[in-house]
Length: 355
Image 1 (cartoon, rainbow, N blue to C red):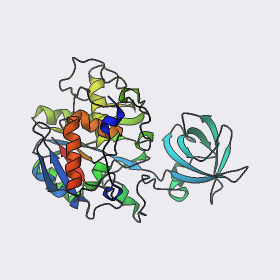
Image 2 (cartoon, one colour):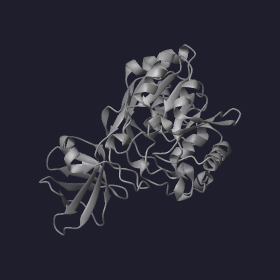
Image 3 (tube, rainbow, N blue to C red):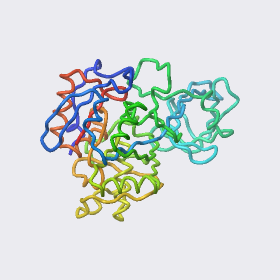
Image 4 (cartoon, rainbow, N blue to C red):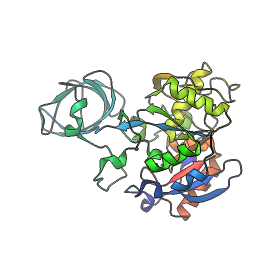
């Protein structure tokens, strides 16, 4: 499989620059992957497509103000620091925007006495930095919301880049499929008998990294911290055993659930093809660890029955995941239909419900 197999043409005017208002007024495409049938809805109508005893699994991660502006203490050269993963009280894995930022270099932050030094140089623009003091409680003043690079419009209300159920701080980007839900919609779904479950996956580097290899199998996906607790694992398993579907809200929930299924089968999430015979449904188990699960066509699904997602970038690992869930040509055809129907793409764009 070549990365170019997941390419498609997308004129810039299709890229949403602002979130829908209200959240659940966005468009919703329903794709039946068994038949290829496509229908069009408003997102609030998803309540008609989800049945009692189905379980929605949502990622409750919360985006931190992870974009920091610094300068080199020796030269004054400007540097942008994107926090990706906290390693301990003062050490972070970061993505650096700036030239020649090497080991032992000291960075200072605009309008603050806080500084950091580079302790390790990793792949490409990744670095490990050590701050002069813990910064968790200072990020509101020190940083800003790291909107994706394809969004050029200023976001006045940072909460519009948070899901309404965001809770656990740690992400460098929002789980954007969840941005469509309102409190009223979740209450209505719950009253209908739909179960609501939560997991956590802190979104990191791969959200910002293009796939740079030619062959899909050669791409090295970065790890992201994920957790599913025992209470939510039981809720998910009980709903499945009662005849409900496990519906993942977003690709991050997909990765968390499938990781839990692979671990349940005694497998290694960094090698999803570890046992071709284990491709039936697996109960999920509670876990708390980094996951390197890379889902692309040929993957053996173990947990997820349906998913809610946005429309993803060409040649991205997320589009590869969608093409593993539905057939690649079917997915690319759905994207062409979305363009014909003037759907909005990417983080602030419209949604797709794949069943």
